[in-house]
Amino acid sequence: MINRRFFYQQICENLFPDGLSATAIEGHNALLDYWEAHHAKDDDRWLAYILATAYHETAHTLRPLRETKAVSDEQAAERLERAYQRGQLPWVRKPYWRKDADGKYWYGRGFVQLTHKSNYKKMSKYVDEDLVEDPDKALDMTVAVKIIVIGMIGGHFTGAALPSYFSKQNDDWVGARAIVNGLESANKIASYGYQYYSAISYTT
Image 1 (cartoon, rainbow, N blue to C red):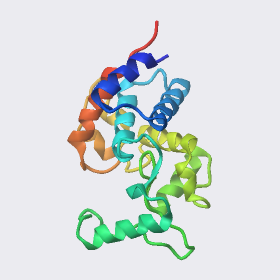
Image 2 (cartoon, rainbow, N blue to C red):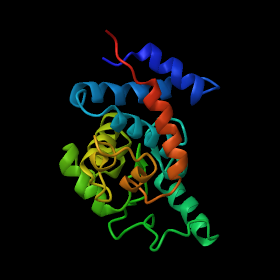
Image 3 (spheres, helix red, strand yellow):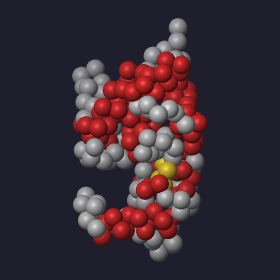
């Protein structure tokens, strides 16, 4: 079992200098619980990088969020559209946040900001939830945990997977960003990953 006391002491010191909110603790515990239940024998670097990704993608809250921290579909779409029109999203080729013919939005949700209908459909079968019928299920803590862990280990987001970057032969904290989003903020997320990795120890 992961030594939670040591873990929280370390991340409070290095990643949450202003203290951890109850919500952030809940998010960390949900991810650690799932890891211990399903992946305890896997590489700890995988867990560290998953936590670092969640830390980055949720603006350090460790709470499953709508993209831009919006409170509704409409607000998320409006904020993304405004940023796009201002040229603040140069990597976006086709706006993915606009309402489709069925009146649904496929902007980012969860710990890993799942986007595009095709990805919601793909992840539905892996987490055993109908994310196409109800995309907001990606905001549920239990579902969000499954999406980020299963998606990053299995390479279901971009084709890149954790085992390709962390193994006996590889230790690529920067390149691992390709699992989710190219090299966007790759160095920053790598630094978070190092901090989480140093916080992972086990009770005797």
